[in-house]
Amino acid sequence: MSKFKDLTKFVSSNLRDLKQGNPELMQGFSALSQAASKAGALDEKTKELLALAIAIAIRCDDCIGFHTQACIRLGMTKQELEELVGVAVMMGGGPSLMYGSHAIAAYKEFTEAA
Image 1 (tube, rainbow, N blue to C red):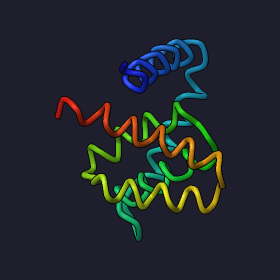
Image 2 (cartoon, rainbow, N blue to C red; image 1 turned 90 degrees about the vertical axis):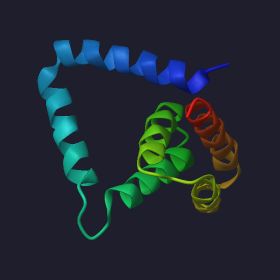
Image 3 (cartoon, rainbow, N blue to C red; image 1 turned 60 degrees about the horizontal axis):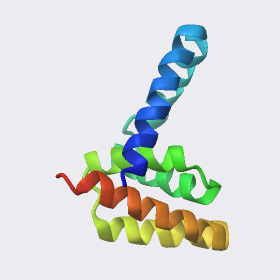
């Protein structure tokens, strides 16, 4: 089963459609994302790890998929992911534990071919 690969492809396709229908919204979100992700006092990887922890705590599978991919691209290890899940659970309780397992599944899925 490739839930997260399929999910990120599905969402990306719909976002492309939204970009055609509302380009100003997507340009604005892209600019916000780039500004927030830009290395400064925190490097890009740290910011993506934070985004993934927040995605788990707020229970967003789509966000978990995209931010897991970005974290892997930036060199996140399985141990970093496991510790990150612990922080997300501390902040979001039992439901975040369930979504933390989704991040583990996404990590396995995106790294299995690597």
